[in-house]
Amino acid sequence: MNSTIPLRKRCLKGWNLLRRMSPIRSKSGPIGAAKKKVAENVDRPRQDSETDNETLHPSRIIVLVTSAGGSSKIDAEQRRCRDLLIAKGLLFEEFDGCDIRNRNKREFLFRLSRSKAYPQIFIEMEGNVYKYVGLFHDLQEMIDSSEIPSDVRDQYNIKTFDEVFAGVAKGGPIFPLSSIW
Image (cartoon, rainbow, N blue to C red; front, side):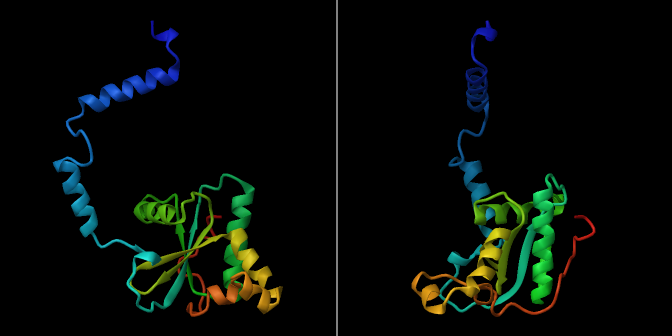
């Protein structure tokens, strides 16, 4: 009899059955509320928009990379991103998204960027605040935009690489993953 019911409906039917059998009916119940309260009280990274109107200074660049590889395009972009940041002499740290120890931070950064692509570039501000910059192609566009006349950049609110990363400490990679990729 199950073979006549499409697979999607069978899965949804099974899911609904499991959900009804679960002792936790919703996230708004007492257990869900307790979990939410604990999660809110944990010292977690904050997004740039969550800060008060205080002046925050950028401290370093965070690059979210993957050691799983997957495609030559991702590997090449990660390598080029790293080489670019080293050439500019900026302080940055690479986080391996595949490392289980970085899972919580990776999930936070994925939510912040609304993307699961690699490599992703963030600026870490003082006070554990993160600002999403973009992907590697966004870095390339910032570098290319320096050739645009300043009055046009101002009119269309186009930021250059040097403007975005002004104030980031000089240095190099803190935790290089180049041996992985």
